[in-house]
Image (cartoon, rainbow, N blue to C red; front, side):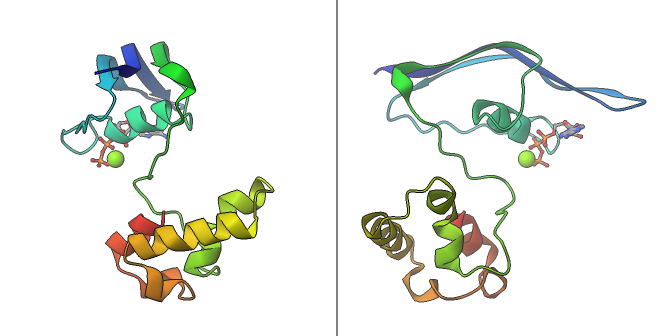
Length: 139
Ligand SMILES: Nc1ncnc2c1ncn2[C@@H]1O[C@H](COP(=O)(O)OP(=O)(O)OP(=O)(O)O)[C@@H](O)[C@H]1O
Ligand SMILES: [Mg+2]
């Protein structure tokens, strides 16, 4: 199988005025195409921090992340981060809107995805009427 991502000796420290937290301490792992990889560990062990760094939402302190073949990273955050005043469809197309890619073809594709994920009947609903798992699928 092709290696699509390599994480080498990754470390992350958070700082505030009084404390230093070593959230990730020298992690290395490879990800292969088609592989399902689970990162398991107790609360606070650094799972979200690792994904935030791989997803380019946060900075590493040291180490290397190599993503091969220009592959894009899609990342469902731990919190769904949906806007409560937007419908499910409007939340789902927000990224396209911001990027100026809101074509009818793209909107239809998003609608198809919502149907695929069992959210077809909720496109005009608001996040507060969805379950936690449903909101995560929208995210
Ligand atoms: N923005 C931040 N500033 C300071 N410390 C942080 C920050 N984010 C996370 N931490 C600390 O880094 C460590 C790892 O946090 P992280 O959120 O990655 O854990 P987690 O494994 O995802 O936990 P959970 O299973 O509860 O979601 C924790 O000690 C946490 O307090
Ligand atoms: Mg987490």
